[in-house]
Length: 243
Image 1 (cartoon, rainbow, N blue to C red):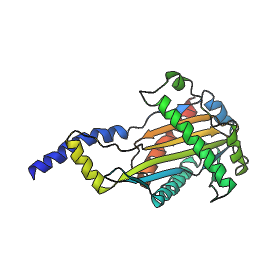
Image 2: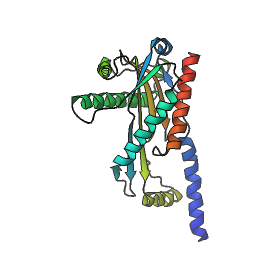
Image 3: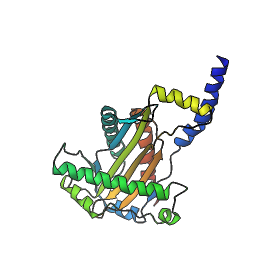
Image 4: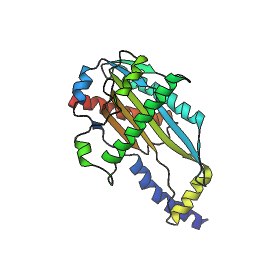
């Protein structure tokens, strides 16, 4: 029994620093004309958050969990509604995608474009090994003018807010295996986990403001989402006032 306890303690000491590092929020990125375009806007349209929650087994097999993902999306949407109310000095509307058809395809294509651009932002302005300093100093990314097509659902929208997240929930078997592996000096990959939020110009598609949280925690948990989104919107409001 003492020997097993020492294994658990050693594994815990290995995982705690990783956990603390993962919970540290990074700083936001802002377009050079962020304040100008933000000040000019009157209406913000919030696109339904796109959350993806997976279950990860001891063998490394991931399974998309539909109910967990929907719950996370619904919770995030409610929290964003609360955080934007009266905080951004804008009229806020919400857009939920249709279930199917060409309009659904339009939503999916724009959500996919946001994900593609966001990956480039994270790779080139956040990750130390692949960061391009000029991309941080002169933050200019765009989804393209095709984003205007979303205005058919919110004709008055000057800005769009996109939010997305990804989380892997480990099975008990994978957690146990990770402790043993950690004690032996081997580390099991956790998968790419993040929460991102972007403010997009409704005319040009330019990404005006972007925030990224690495290893955000359990996105199914309302308290976790509320804390993270509170921090993100606080940074957004501070950036707007400081610019």
